[in-house]
Image 1: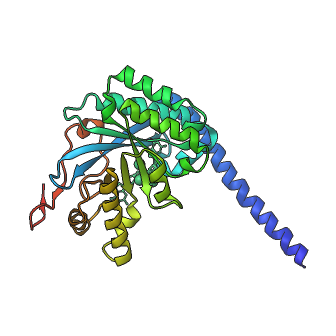
Image 2: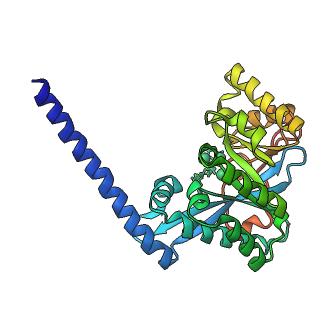
Image 3: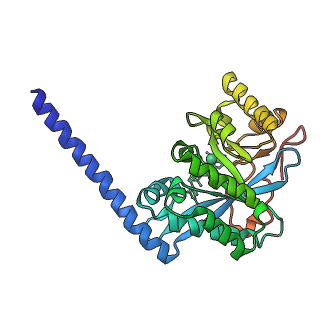
Length: 283
Ligand code: C2E
Ligand code: MG
Ligand code: MG
Ligand code: MG
């Protein structure tokens, strides 16, 4: 009886594995074609100074326009691109496109590019960044590289040297989704970050949960004492923006201020609202 159950479970497991595998193979196949067919595009989500509510930077976010399936969000293909190594050429495309878009903007906003661990492991990321900056003419001070904690778990010495090289070039390094991993705090001491992006989960729960509120306030204070700038991600409400201002948070990014927008719009990005005066106004 036990054996029979085991057998059944195994069979079910294999079948669902098979489906997941099939889907992955399909995405992989389509991804390979997509790179050649120019089906990718970048949107830019502006970041604003909370003090002035002027745009200070942007984050490049990839979009895939599939000829049959339509728009596909990064959550549905970045992990496949990472597992298959396709993220290396795709990531280089993103970097090059982001820098060549940003160099044309009328405001000298920074542009942040998300990097995957595979780009550090399999490609020469330092060489890629250096040659993209040279080819596009974007001043290094306008480029920011976003990494997550996943990168810092393995090969830390090699990664550390690469991050230090970026900083020497004048490129900023941001820790993305801060607080979602296991060792966020210890990584701050070890790696040369110029920015912390507080994960949107904290921002979205801080107005209801006093413990989360205390954590956010403390991260902002920590950023100040470490001389690391802070961006709050996923700001969606006026209440969140005001609380962050009260805590002295320097920068915000979120749907309240702006959705991700086209390269053309990003060059003169404006906030959708103003929360500076007592009454919130549509800008
Ligand atoms: P991320 O780097 O943390 O980017 C922020 C994500 O939060 C974006 O989702 C953005 O659209 C979304 N977002 C911004 N404001 C708000 C808000 O107020 N509320 C909510 N609920 N969401 C908000 P998106 O564009 O779907 O990207 C998801 C993730 O995919 C990114 O998270 C990043 O990890 C990855 N990704 C995107 N583009 C690239 C890329 O070019 N290369 C790599 N390696 N990863 C990328
Ligand atoms: Mg990011
Ligand atoms: Mg993030
Ligand atoms: Mg994320």
